Image (cartoon, each protein chain N blue to C red):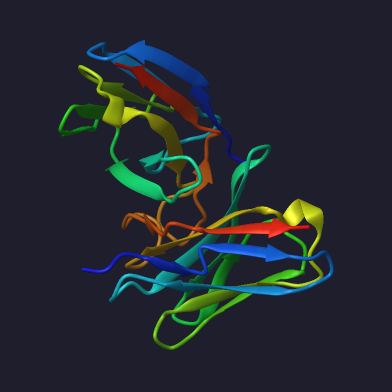
Length: 113
Length: 113
C-alpha cells in the first residue's frame, strides 16, 4: 500500500522566514493534495497537483510536484503567525476511479512573532 | 456556498454504546468520504459513498458502518464503542471523488469513556 512520508515532522521558524515542507510517496503519485489543519479542526484545502512538474501558488504558498522523484514540496515565503498549523499531504493511490486518499502524518509548523 | 457540515461537533459516549455521526456535503457534491484521525495513526480512510453506494472501504472492523441518502447526506455509525474509537471523525465531500478536490468538514470529536 502507498505511504506518504512528510519531513520535517515539526518546524519552528521566526516570522518572515521562508520554509519548505516535503512529502515523499512510496509509489507513483496520481494526484497530490495539500491541506492545512488547525489543532482539532477540519482540513483546509490548499492546493491540488496532478501533473508532473506542476507548480501552483496561492498568496505566499507554492507547491510543486516532481513526478520522477514521487515527491511534492510546499514552500512558504515570508512566513506569518497565520501560517501556523499542521500541514498534511494526501495522495490518490491510483489514477481515476474512486480510491481513498492516503495522508502523511503531517508537519507541525510554529511561527514565532 | 455552505461548506461541509458535520454534526455534532463533540460527543462523549460510554464504552459499549453506539453512536451516529452526520455529514451534509456541499450542495451538488455526490461523493462523501469519512476519515478517522488519531494522534498515533494520523488520518485513516473509513469509507466513501457515491450516489448512495459504498464505493470503497478502509481497513476498519465491521463495527464501523455508513450510509448515504438520496440527498447525498451521509451518516456513519459505530457500534459497541471501544476506548480506542476516541478520535476526530472527518468527512469530506467532492463532486465525483478523486481528482475533483475534496472539501473537509470541521469534524466530530468523539470521546469514549
